Image 1 (cartoon, rainbow, N blue to C red):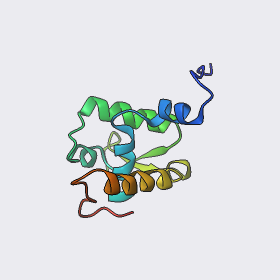
Image 2: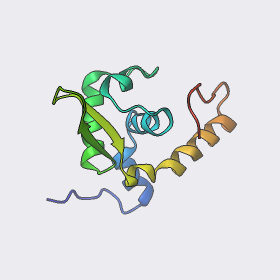
Image 3: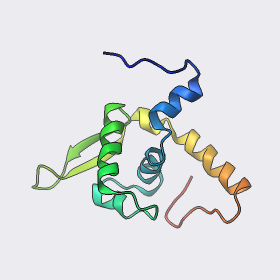
Length: 115
């Protein structure tokens, strides 16, 4: 069953999918810091909890923004990678980086990150 939209506004509709406090940070970590494993996302300085991270990864997978693949000998260990659709969010994140750097004092791109 398709979910009803609360609005036909593209901004509102996008925010309904990825506009919570954590989702874009998970995408940021994948896109700019090369994180792929659950444990790596937990190391981010914002301090996401395990249950929220698991929920966001599942949501991103359901939205076809990421795919997961098993790695190693343990079938429950997963690598997460952005899909082409997920990669298409790059200009959105870059615009947010540029805006934040220009308008929010004391912001910076962490070492290891890039636009």
